[in-house]
Amino acid sequence: MKVLLIGTGSVGEAIALVAARRPWLEQMVLADFNLDRAREVQKKLRDPQKFPIEKVDARDTAEMAALGKKYHVDLIMSAVNCNVNDFIFDAAYEVGCQYMDMALGELGANMGKYLLDRSDKWAQKGLLAIIGMGMDPGVSDVFAKYAEKHLFDEIDEVGIRDGAAMEIEGYPFAPTFSIYDAIEECTDPALVWEKDKGWYDVAPFSDPEVFPFPEGIGPLEVVNVEHDEVVLVPRWVKCRKVTFKYALGDVFTNVMNVIKLLGLHSYQPVDVKGVQVAPIDMMAALLPDPAKMGPLMTGKTCVGTFVTGWKDGKPRRVYLYQTTDNQESMKNYGIQAVSLQTGIGPVIAMELLAKGIWQGKGVVGPEAFDPDPYLALMPEFDFPYGMVEM
Image (cartoon, rainbow, N blue to C red):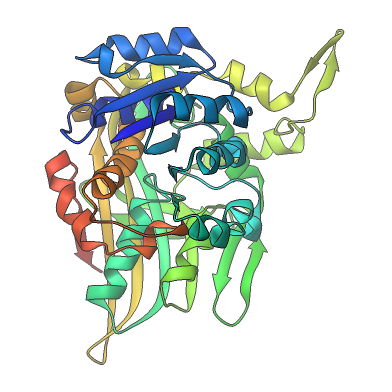
């Protein structure tokens, strides 16, 4: 498989390093607006000739399509902010190759709308686009499909529940994933889906509950946050309700509330002494780069899918999850845990595509595929999952 990777940030780096160890990868083009960053990633790879670098503007569809054609790629992978996915998606269509991303653009129930609305068009051309195939969304959605297939006769709720027991030395506040995604998710209204109501907004950080996370993380308060699974899961998994809750902590939620109150989450430029600056860009510049925080981080992060319902006439509550330890992540890849966890998700999907195990046409989420081969591959990537009866 030949892949054009758009973006070599912390997760893009993880994708490249993980994919480099798999025999099906013929070539991966490292494309970024920042060539120095692409070179930095290339130097960490054992066979740099297999990973050529190219400068690219992720908002320039024609430029990305030209790169795709130049290298005869089979897949274009978006590893940049989801707000530019539409341009990358269109480039893949122009090339006539597969497409994959890890998060959905737009807000609320409209997340991913531009891509989903073009599913028939892609299917008619015989092309496949997999959207939301990171960790969460991504692996969390695969867990939901696995629960539907094997663990339940009827599902009441699919609830993504994420938490961590992690510390970052010297930083009382520092998002461990894309700063843009963190700010957007935590300042937008949260989203819930119910079978009888459809999608509807609720206040961010609302409806707190204490969730008992496994593997030593322990009980943490989780709250409603906007997230992609609430849009994707109901399309392919039969259930009555879908929610997403995250254990953020008081410091994180307080900072996000202040950012929103002051309008610092805005993309609209303001004049600062004659210079036009978007407030969210200023926030990103002030906060530490998640790609550089690995040596300062300790602890584990956990992403999982809490499913409730009925099996054989009896109520059942199951938590399917994956935990990644930062010390092990740094030891094995030199990448911090959240980035590695997110990056492994799409690489497993790439392998299933490369081997012809996952096949399809149109624009779909991870839930559209058989989850069994995905879960079977996870231990091969030193990425085991767990299951707890609650």
